[in-house]
Length: 315
Image (cartoon, rainbow, N blue to C red; front, side, top):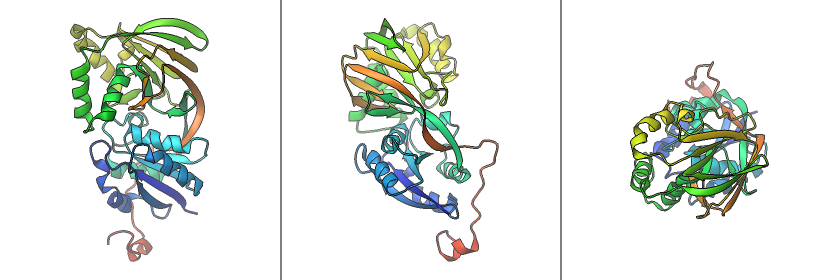
């Protein structure tokens, strides 16, 4: 029996890789394995509604076409279900997709879906309302996510411009952290709470993080002096960030952060106003998805005579 896929597309995500998705699907998805429908989001968090409705209609898998924010929206809608997640990366960062070693070329990502390679990963509950599957946090990253929320343009260039513009003026903040029952103070520029290894674009904030170990990686970053940037930044892009003297990383199952004065939190790249106190709780093995079987080559679709005659695929 064919699996039912709901393909949810964010038409404004990232760099525009998703704009030809229907043609890419026709030419690359295995029509003998899947029946699918394509749905387009029309407003912020619409993907959550569409994913929830698809699950209620009996979808076997809901596929997010977009960046980490689009993936997060779909995951919110799948919470509490056994429906699988699929990912066709089309954002500017694609942190979770990169950690999963999914190809960033949409046609190849569709061929990964054809493998139907099942995996299960952890998620992080935030204040009992949100889920994080990639990397979240408070401080400078949440501040930038807040500015991106209001920005008219998306993509790596816009994100980088904001970081460069705001870096000098953003100051450390005092936080109270309770990590698995142990409470202590930290003065930090950024606190990242990671399920995955990176924010995106191979900017690795938690190089030892694993998606299925039942633990979150907490990265506490002091403000890096300008004359140390040339040394520290390359460490983040080579999975050696934990070697920096400005970085402290610990693993935990539960974390509470108090002192988040501006109330904003970065949740998988999207800014959310959620309060001064934020509780993160690991949910082990809570998300089923289709990953990539790296031992098997990605097979190019060979259309059957039946499919050609039905005009599902071009002759």
